[in-house]
Image 1 (tube, rainbow, N blue to C red):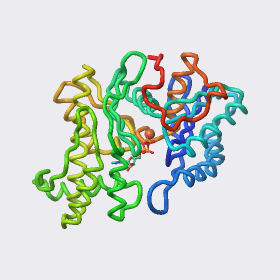
Image 2 (cartoon, helix red, strand yellow; image 1 turned 180 degrees about the vertical axis):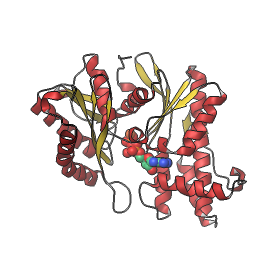
Image 3 (cartoon, protein in one colour; image 1 turned 135 degrees about the horizontal axis):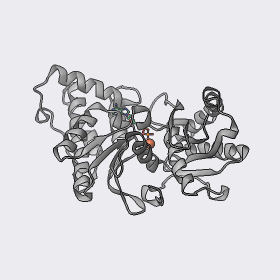
Length: 336
Ligand code: ATP
Ligand code: FE2
């Protein structure tokens, strides 16, 4: 085993450990998911889940990767943003491991980690990132020494909107992948269907987005008697077109020519297809990492930790408190 950086991810539902070697060679993560029995995520219950799952996951990774503590160069963890109780579990585990292994501790920005794993895996250089997950929907681009948020949701994350709609229809968490299947089944059987057949609001506000009006309107369509599959299809079409429209404007404003998708919703084939069509029409590219690196994962935290370690960064214990509202542009980006 090469010298490696270990990453700990625990911002929300997912507890995950991952590693990269010192050149950025990635390895699949070791993850456990908290699934609420009913309703949304309860932060304390998710945190308890992570506490119980951590020891076994670490052991699994160490054994499967033939890893010994002397192979480890640093331990990185998600310092924010996310749910406080969940973040604190990951931070505590990371502090303990870094102390025990006598290596630097590196607190990293979860949103920035989505960008860096995407750059590492796809080879894109200076992308606009469309970061679409449950908790976050942001359009991000680098300007100088920061990743700037140039557009974002004004209310809920797009994944959260999909999950909420699914839950209201009795579909269990996570709803996004099941909505994707229902939507695909519908359009396969009804290829002539257009968005005008099931109109929903289209909420683009300058460079920002909003999804809660769309959620309410989709629920209303069901009440009016429309079928679940057709509403799922229209919901995706409206939500994704609005999101891709803002991404296109971001490419136009920044002059960048690469669109990178990240976050759990970036697993969606229709969103990928729309992004690709938009990019190709303007002579740009649209890329995304494998699904395992779109969803939250420890490997992306390790990869950002590696880049920060390379430029001499580490987090002293007294500065290692979590920050649940950490902003993307808070983090100084002084690596290539
Ligand atoms: P973050 O902390 O970054 O907000 P998260 O906790 O939402 O992340 P992720 O693993 O990034 O976790 O994303 C999960 C979200 O992705 C859920 O809302 C889920 O419904 C959505 N999702 C996953 N796969 C798909 C898919 N194929 N189509 C649409 N949505 C999807
Ligand atoms: Fe995430």
